[in-house]
Image 1 (spheres, one colour):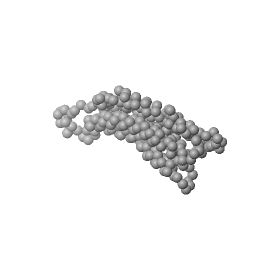
Image 2 (cartoon, one colour; image 1 turned 60 degrees about the vertical axis):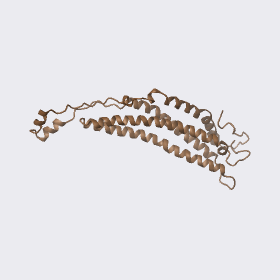
Image 3 (cartoon, helix red, strand yellow; image 1 turned 90 degrees about the horizontal axis):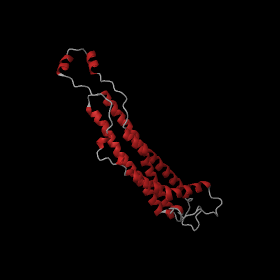
Image 4 (cartoon, one colour; image 1 turned 90 degrees about the vertical axis):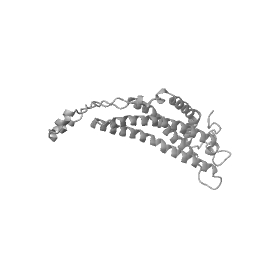
Length: 244
């Protein structure tokens, strides 16, 4: 049953703004169909094996970076007899081929990014819908308006956090790329290789948290609108709301 089904568009109002009608129908579809479906889909996604790895070491992607042989005692003795130019040639790291990203992580991110976009669009639509329901400022009962404003504040806070998801994803690629570059330059430093794998494991955990947050935001949005629907759609408590 529609979350907004008890508030119908009034056909007796020929001057109703078309924009308001569009937002009403969008909101009605969101709360009666789309949001419950998204919560169910995210539940199923979070149960998939790819997002429940018991051993994160299986995430490790091969690094096509040659490991130099450790110097022998003879090499070290000969090193003292060579000039600086020869030393630099000797210490030059072996060339690396194409170093791919972690395909397992990229695959998961390709599934997460559309979910982030969908939630952002939902947030924007619901916010615009509520803003179009705010009546003009006048003396009288403004309790419903206060509720509308509180909900809009919460939606704005959620949107800020959701916008940060993309920032975190971009940060992962930047930091992992830096770690790979250091590992390929300083091939004898094993810590740089370990750092690459640490970045992959960290973002894997972040992916789960992002999906949990997205599901939670959908549920929160549905809950807060359902509990305050009367005040949101009819903030003045009028017998015949101007829009419904």
